[in-house]
Amino acid sequence: MNRKQRRATPKHGSRTAARPSDSDASQINQLFVDAARLESAGKLNDAVRAYKRVLLLNPDHAEASNNLARALHTLGKTADASVFYARALALMPQLLEQYAGIRATLVSLLPALDRALSQQAAAWPKQLNGAELFGEAGLGAIAADALLRYLLQSIPVRDVAFERLLTMLRALLLGDAGKPFSETMLTFACAIAGQCCINEYVFATTPDEDAQVEHLNQAIDDALARGASVDATQLAVFAMYRPLHMLASAAMLLERSWPAPIDELLNQQLREPAEERRLRDSIPRLTTIDDETSRKVRQQYEENPYPRWVRVARQVVPIPVDQYLRDQFPTGAFAPLGKIDGLDMLIAGCGTGQVAIASVQKYSGAQGLAIDLSLSSLCYARRKTPPELSSRIEYAQADILQLASIGRSFDIIDACGVLHHMADPFEGWRILLTLLRPGGLIHLAFYSNAGRSDVVAARTYIAERGFGSTPDEIRRCRQELLETPLASVTRFTDFFTTSECRDLLFHVHEARITIPAVKAFIREHGLKFIGFEFDQPILQRYRAEFSARGWSLTDFDRWQELETKHPDTFSGMYQFWVQKA
Image (cartoon, rainbow, N blue to C red; front, top):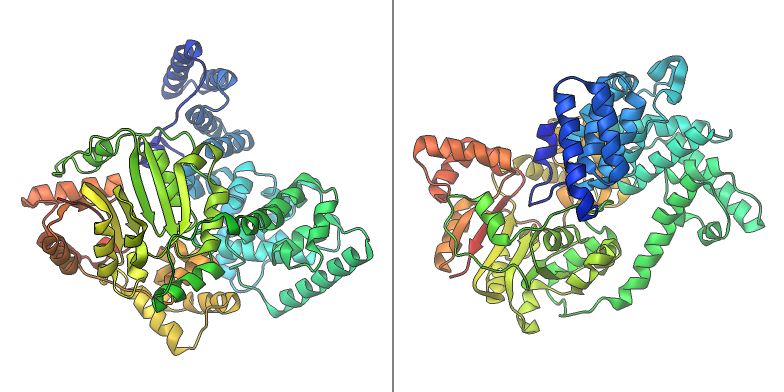
């Protein structure tokens, strides 16, 4: 990962932060500066030694790990570089959001992987064997790579070529399930199983694979019932196709000793889901859920908590919310809250907790009430919340339509990606405003009517062909869409997991709005529009474009003109901040 990719990632005030004792901090900082200077001068071997000295004093220095990896990479020491790239990601998992950069780094480290991706993409749906994909080395050409393994166990792959290669590698390993795997190959198989669990088994299967997996399921169930041994290879291969909890006697697996990679799968697929089930009775119910649309949405997210995620951001340096807004909107007019402590937040529609956790980490003094319709999502969120943040986030089940009854008010409300799943999104917005204190801020996100034309077309395609929203139907539908012009929906990362694809293309209720509708609501309620939120590089581009034309970034008519000309401007969502008078 290069400097530009690293700078783009830790937005919202996040950056690497070594935390040794004060007496060592100055020495570590000087060593790091010296190492970076050596790297810039092309003295890479000296730089490697210097970065290693930094890590000897502070093993959690993420930037030193990344820079060491880059220097080793340049020197051609790719296996060592991969280890330190993976370490940098482990120290700052928010870097995983830079998927394109990580993928580029990975294929640069592993030319064999790059070739296999291209070859399998060209041959699809034909399955190439290990020799055709990797030559004489077979899967061993990539199986031991640390960065590849970490990526597979941390985030869904987000491109079709990678998905298709992993689909075929899984099938190859299924064919070898009758043989014992080496330690390296068992670890790699477990990494693919972890990936499949993360994406909720969204990869395509063939009837022959389904039959083999069913036979394997019966064999493992029979062995467990008899108290016989179960081969770790068979368990890893089964977990690539179905979650381990589907085994009839899955709990018995926890009574046995396993190699470390298998034990990690047991954590992911048995222990952690069991913990979430235990948490259900501990989640407060703040309101009833009576609205018909709310009930339908709740049911969807009970079945498919959204979004599934693995790694929580680390080494985040909090900043005051006023500073964040000044950085994001340097020309925006807003009244500072002036709060660096006791910042009360409502995260409305928190899902599985990612936004709630990010918010209390990001803003100085933030404490949050995080609500959602789905108990399954809330239990996932509570399990994933780091212990050091647990006292700052209160999770509760509630319907936005009933929130006026809770008798609380907030400095900030975050309602990103939730109101457009209500029968009347603007009614939800009106209710949230009643909970916002005078001068309070609200962060909103709505689907754009113009920006989701291909999603609308895909939803029409799905309805016309009668696809339901079961996992099998989602898998089949995805493969059909990939053979049509509607494959453009792969630009959404949501396409690459089952629950997120359901949210994207099969949602029980989706509303889309327009810029004029947002403008009218803001004027009607006397709100101050602070600005649309984009990643910094994109925002800087719009600043330059608007400045050259003499436009204001808060001029809705100019944004409407831009979106009319470029419908993909808000292809994700309209994300923006407003302030209550």
